[in-house]
Length: 288
Image (cartoon, rainbow, N blue to C red; front, side, top):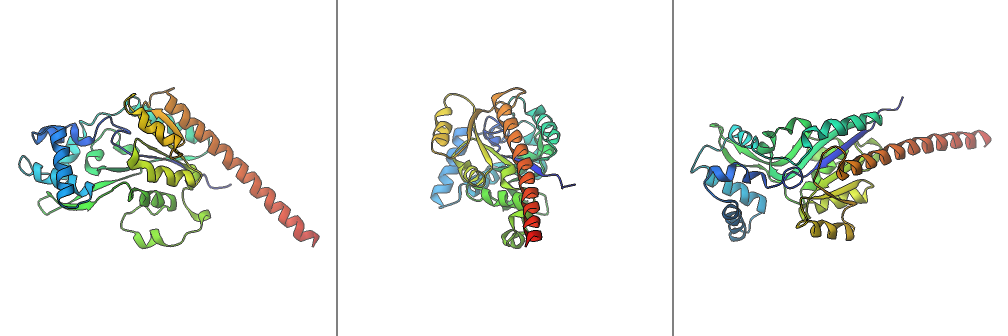
């Protein structure tokens, strides 16, 4: 019996699974700032130091937190408990998993985010993900954040898609990631992937999965954000535009289930083709 294929859903986090940037729920209020002032300070730090924007916000987080409290992994995870999620997400994973399993495939979920891994790990859905790829701090012997261990920007996001594709998940395995691997040996083909994101920072991942026969979905919260994602589908950057509603029966869920149906049917046809090809080849060799 052929080994079951894996079907993977890959998600951005901020404004994809959660309505706001994750720092805005608890971290920014705890350092005594408002969101606009915090992000303006991050932008100022980025521009004045010719700095990667992810490294800039991590630096500002550390500097501002140190004036109020110790920035530890435990503290950041605690802040994650206050992050709000879009409607339906508490039951989304079981519903999607059950459907994928019914199609004789194995479900897996991944986060690829420029947000902070420690905060995501504190959310109520963190256990649903096989891996969370996001920005992360290094901690000193007192357990305090002292340096970035990982920064994930919009272009570096794509490396994690190849990690998922090849099954080389640890971020320190770089030689293995860059080594040649035939498509037939890769753990999850791109055609068995859906990438769900909300904006321009997700475009490299969306394009990567699309050009490799996978699917991408751009989500929006309200009519104000809809023009941006509409442009993305018209420009050929995404396959679908859907409201960020993960509830049972929502348009987003129906779209994901339809993609799963298509992948299931394509896999059956591929198996039939391969068997037909092998049989034809054997018959030709027998005639010769």
